[in-house]
Image 1 (cartoon, helix red, strand yellow):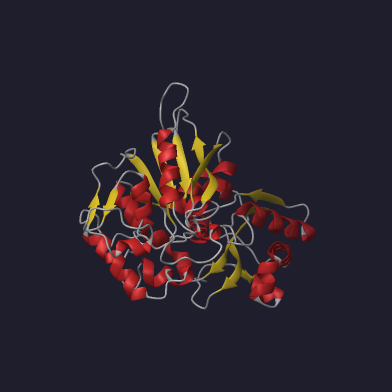
Image 2: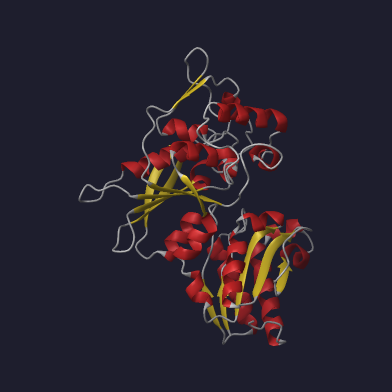
Length: 378
């Protein structure tokens, strides 16, 4: 068999490349003669930079020191894809690496911010090659955020002024949105015409499906209504941006802030699938294995497994999903198999503690199903 391994990262447990390696070890322990094709995926969240580095041979890691989400310095990087005959010089900047929740020692719902993300974008805009040319395309990866600031911190780093009624800069984070009186974009740095937001969700900024209601609790936000009202206040000061745009609520509303800066929404998982040539890999595959840490209703909203399943359906390739945990509303239609690590390990805590071990077990379990003829191309 030819098996394509195209999972996302299992956030906090294993990178996409580590997930691929563990699944491959497990599969090979049962079926050592099969061809295993590695295509680690991402969808705009944590691991996006890694996916581009693996997929694009001439990708270059560009170090940058930024202000982290709790205002401590963070050594991060963005990825440069140098210009070729078919690709403009491209900068990939990941919010999770600069302003992500994993950079916090403790949740900071009122004060966490996206200033560092904006600083990394500014560093990418400052880059020049030997001929003095800058980047012509920006890929701005959202996901894994620590804050609910509507992208206000990133806007500030790019030259916007967010002022209170006295003309003073408001505090960073959600806290500062309450006292906003003016958002002055006159000094905002222009983005390249091809500035794309790689989002992993399609939530609007506001309301029951918005940034505060859906993602606030995982960041420690207690007053959801108050946070939503603060984001609505920010939106009222930027009337040229539609807060209902799908993806505006991504990364605590950072999608909205980037829209205000002139970027446009794009599917993160789709762009990364193109970068790793996933469709080509599936043309002669007998099975594709994808997965993520939590497989639930949010998966269908633009997560990597949904894009893998879409491309696999086009190619007539059966799809198996491996997930740390599986929600009751997880999309199961059209899947050949779903393996839950929590079920294998006897609980979520055990699965998280030894994720790669249980991923090996999952790979072996799927290989045994292949032995029994469970997977057939359509």
